[in-house]
Image (cartoon, rainbow, N blue to C red):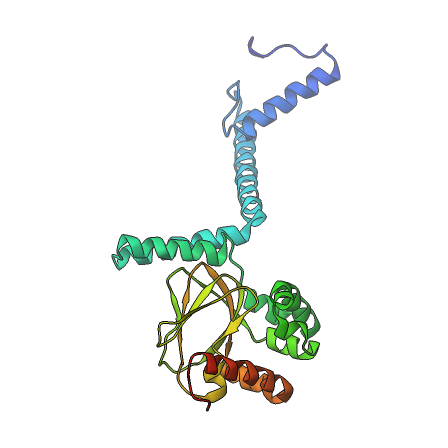
Length: 271
């Protein structure tokens, strides 16, 4: 053997196996022939086999490590991939800087750095589990809203399962006066201003709702509603609104009572 290799015949088995392990790892992990070049043909072929096995194991290790790191926070990775597409879209259409900034802030507030296919996840669950999750997610809304706090739990559940989460930025007009109303809104968090023809301004905040008047009257919006802060709302479409209230006619009367009071305050004639 070469003088660079220590003579190990008379050393302890621990030293012998440690040196053998070091030689094997230097072949396999360094993807080379290690400290000593192979001499005979047997050494050459064994060394090549060792390097091939080592390269394969190394690639598998890197692949598994990468997959593990990505799976640790897959929702954040999905958000980052989605936002890269949004950035490329904004760049492709050459959107102005202030619009890009508003889009960026919208994504930050709407998804908060994580993205889930919530509709698909809930769709795979049983109805009792789905209702339990929705009731839990909307617990603050229910606790802050007298309409829900004093209502039949079955009505509350029927309502909550049909709500869709939406986010609006300060200055956004959620509703414009004179347009055909297709949704009503429940405020989970935020402040909105109700603007009427007489320049009267009414503030609504957490636990309030608006937009129900035209769903009841099937007319056009009687006032505009503007977001004053970042608003986290739940919307209910007119079809789902009527579907739920057909099952609970007493709740329709509760909505009508509030709607009539609001119409009186903004000076509209009752329908």
